[in-house]
Amino acid sequence: MFSQSCHYVTVSLMRATFSVYMVSAAGLLLAQEGSISASRIREDVRFLSSDALEGRGVGQRGGDLATEYLAGQFAQAGAQPVWPQGSYYQEVPLVGVETQGDAGTQLSAQAHGKRIEFAWLEDFVGVGAEQRPDTRFEGDAVFVGHGIRAPEWSWDDFKGLDLTGKVLVLFTNEPPSDDPKFFDGRALTYYGRWVYKYEEGLRRGARAVLILHTDQTAGYGWDVVRSSWGRETPFLKLAAGEPALALEGWLSRAAAEKLLGLAGQTVDGMLAAADRPDFKPVPLGIRIEGRIHSKVREIRTRNVAAMVPGSDPNLKSEFVVYSAHWDHLGIAAPVNGDSIYNGAIDNATGCGILLELARAWAALPHKPRRSALFLSVTAEEGVMKGSEYYAAHPLVPAEKTAIDLNYDAVYPWGRAREIVISGAERTTALAEALAIARRMNLAVKPDAHPEQGHYFRSDHFSFARAGIPAFSIGVGTGFYGEPAGYGERLFQEYNTLHYHQPSDEFHDDWDFTALAQAADYGFLLGATVANQEKLPDWIPGDTFRRR
Image 1 (tube, rainbow, N blue to C red):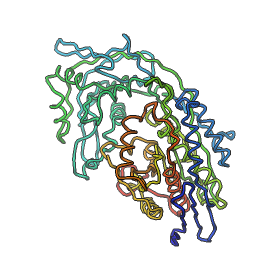
Image 2: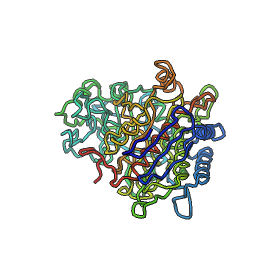
Image 3: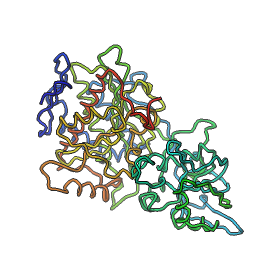
Image 4: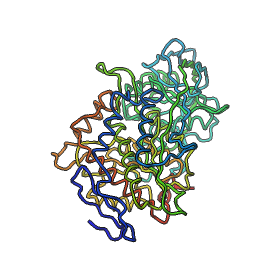
């Protein structure tokens, strides 16, 4: 159908190979029929998630093969290299740190003549962020509630107390509220993420930070914490003299009860105190000592990027960015005899879409005014280290980056009824994002679980922290031609049985129509932004608003 005001035509949405046209104000046909192909996306996903790529582990052979494939496909599409000497690669200096659960790893607390020894994995987990094989520390424990200072909500758990050299003890998450004007109500803010707790502790000069785990505050059980922190953790390599925490750690609830018991306190009592606005930090009178024995290695890894220049001499130095992480968990502990964590949905799907977008953009006979950057980043599974590095060392500065549209785990289960663009509502790109969804007959599905803080858990967030409007594009669980509950059943099955497991494998019976729809959607939205007079921004008052 034609949309005269926006100059788009979109047809044949029922077909796996889409026919998408974009018409300029002068009437020029900008995209040809079949420019987005579900079958090409399928084959990219098939290869990237094959056993030959060994789970695309960072610093592993399979990860190197994946980046070479991506660079080769970008070149074949006609997308240009972006780094010096004609390279598609941005080297990302990482250090892998894996805590060794042997006698060299110890954590203890003492007060009033009593001493408690905590057991690795059973009582505590964590990593020495100083990136040393042997890290020793000690310090007085101070309970700091949720460890948040949020001036916009008049909340300060620290009350000006000097915490230099202390061991901070705190809960993750944030004060609970149903008021959307207070910590965004049900929706988790970045203040509630465990990553923020360690960052804030470091900013305040703490020696170590220990998060007291409860299912309620974390949103998941101790087994999830133990499995996540019992493996290698990648860090961006520290510069000479750069500070870091001696321990980024967690205590199980049972261990937390023992620790707080030394001060005559309980987990429930301290959590109740932490949720009150009049909370003040509590020196616990406990001395904590630790020694962390780590296996440390430098990791060779890289982001992969390609570009298609824009057509406007004055605007081609500004970019629309499309992103997707290429990494998964590689070869790791076997499950039912399978040690290859293929990562088919997470995130070979996003990479397949990214490659197809590069092909479609490069094939345009008349390019949009701004340029496009196609960025596949490393180490997302290590808390977005590749995108964090790119945001700190970008091809173009933040003020010339129009928007980041990210793809991470898109479901290949049929023709989608819904598009998911959580976070778009924070930006001035929302109106056009909604208009494109209407033209494509896609409902916009809200975040079903805002309390889980999904917005802060994928690579678009690294761009947001740099002030760049950014969000991910995905599909919901509603699919045409399928019975009620079909998509939700598959999602629950995937999330429960296959997410971050070797069984996240390619299936021949998958229908990639939804991935082509998601690519089409991002193609149209990105091209719209690339042709606008003014760069998008965050809405007034948003945390990430450009400065």
